[in-house]
Length: 241
Image: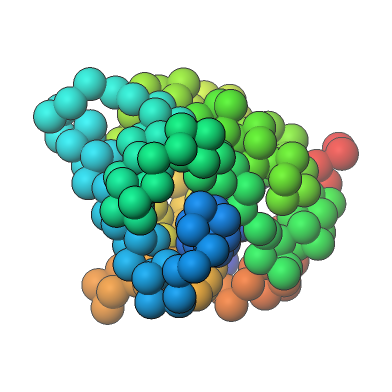
């Protein structure tokens, strides 16, 4: 952890998938709807197939091995792979499975935590989800922002620096005045490389920090994060001015 007395934050930038919503739970529900006969192990195998496809293809896009595709297109690819593995050929069922990526439940502390953080800071959501998918995610999970930004606007995926630059540009501030909040160490490293301050929030499905990571704040949840931010030295800020 860095010296928190040096933190002077004006805007919070929050990851969405995994940090504010339980992505595996939503996809798992979609898989069970696709094939109700699946047991837990079978559902888990198909969930892993989905996740591996998304991670692999986003990496290929980041590495320049394939042209940019928004998250909706990758979700449709993953849904077709999962349906094929489950022996389901109905196009409507495959389409419904793809849309499960927009129906992700919030973590229990998400809605109240965002409301509390918004009393002090402007909140910017920054997600690898497409613009359309992010709209659906926000509506389904009850996420309330001052601004929500999609990596689609940068035609890239985090941790590409151009995605974090979207938030810096919208904030109109030096990157060190923004705090990136995420449950994924890889996401925070990407933000850190552009100069943003960082806060790791522990989640069951996140990517934990390694011993070499040096993030500014470490929190058990959004309430703990809000407590730590309230304890920072300096004047109180309000998103309402």
